[in-house]
Image (tube, rainbow, N blue to C red; front, side, top):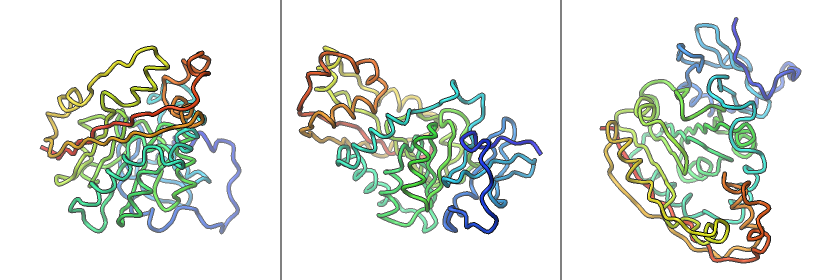
Length: 303
């Protein structure tokens, strides 16, 4: 049997026989829509003991942490793919401090208001530490699947929300999901593959995409970079998705917070630009700042 297993668990001894799996019965519902990520396969995955397997014999170990790694070597650019643990921890700290709560609340409200069936399956692309799906499960019953390229992010999400399904995979490539299998796809401040989103969504499904608005973090960017360039990303995103989707709603999400130094540094650590300016004199001088967190949410339906 060929194997594309979990690199994070390589060399880990098996758990004692009879030890209960951390995957819950509820999680098994959402596992039923996962598909094999081996190139050219795509067959449905089913549970067999502590692995997910397809009928072609490909097998993926379930990590002790309660997630599965479906990432294939050709779908990553480095051995340590995705966000670093430092970036993941920074974003988790911001969430615990309530920074960015407006986005979570808006998405939870919008998703919960959709006419979804009782067994709705919601996918979060670039799920990070899991707060979006976690918030949604508190609002209504769903089967949630979080997909992220970062093992550190998925490990944290699985610890926080063990009743949901967490997958390491590259959401920019072919999604490890069966055709017409999910009700909602979420993409928050991340990239997405329009044709893949359309492929996995049911005919009545919705894609909810959130992008940074032109003035997002404008004050922080002005201090750190020396200028605050405003760039609109939404029109380009909508043009990319026009072949497969129709826009049904656009909603601004905006909050202005007074943040202390620790939160400001976590905002930098949680972004790709942060590492470039960690030694900047401007960063060293930051103590407190009023910061705008601004995004635009777009709800799209399959055309």
